[in-house]
Image (cartoon, rainbow, N blue to C red; front, side):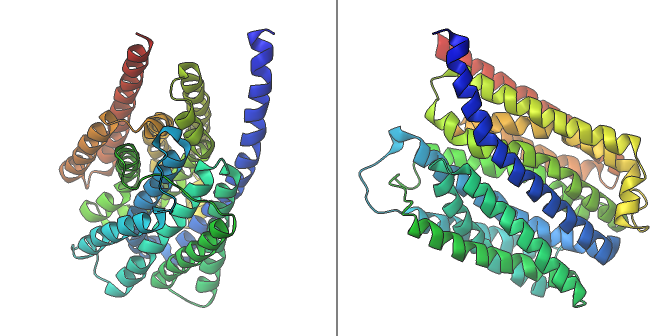
Length: 405
């Protein structure tokens, strides 16, 4: 049998596995976009700017929870990490991580950027449930149930949209919308935990193992880099421009759903086929091209139709149409880089951890030095992302050469 004929069934299997993921992904994109448009128009630039700052705190929890999900999935998929433990320790492990991130969120609430302790309460109450929810998704993902993971994520996005619509219809302000995020987190944590128990999905991987901890750190650092730009603009920039930037950047980051969706399928596959360099390279190219094309289309569309965002957002977002295509272009290397991050997360590499921590420090220093110059900040974000992407490609190439020799 030829190599081409043997690989054809494998390609068909991959396509069949990915198609339902993209169906759920499209539904998730629409739900997320509608949520953003709903709160952007309903709250106005100033109100949404305040909401975005607190949503950035929830993103901090999401950073950690996504890392826990990937860590659990990698541990389940990496057979060589299996231990003799019969009890599943991932629930208390995820709770410990959640408590640590709760301390981070509480520390950030003490800064000058956050003045409403009522809003901070809803954020704090959502932190640990996010981690419990992520642990359940990690068990599903590591067991090869990527479609079920995305179904849960999409369901949470749809629920968030519905609760936000209800809150605004009842006359709630941005704090009311923020409350709905906590509600969705708690409901998701409870129901997903019930499901994995009924399905008897467990992990016998030793908690806090070196590879799973490094996988967690890679996810934490990368997600921090692509999430905290809104917070830095809110803190160091002009308040009105911060609303324009927050609304535009939040909507543009929908492009990350493409590599994120593919990662649900590829992460356990990468972890199970670490010695298969061809598979690793094909997976990176496949996901990288899809991510680049989707993000490139977004840039071109926003460039050709500069009036679409002010029309969608409302008259108070005057600069959104001007800065939108350049924000999309600045995030293009970050979107592509997430594909390589997925492969290195599966491997539990140490090099990306050092790189991303350095990039996080550089991002903060750039924000202090450049803002409130918004155009300069957008350029700096793009250049930083391009630098991170180039170094990640170098790390992958070096690893591939070492494996072959």
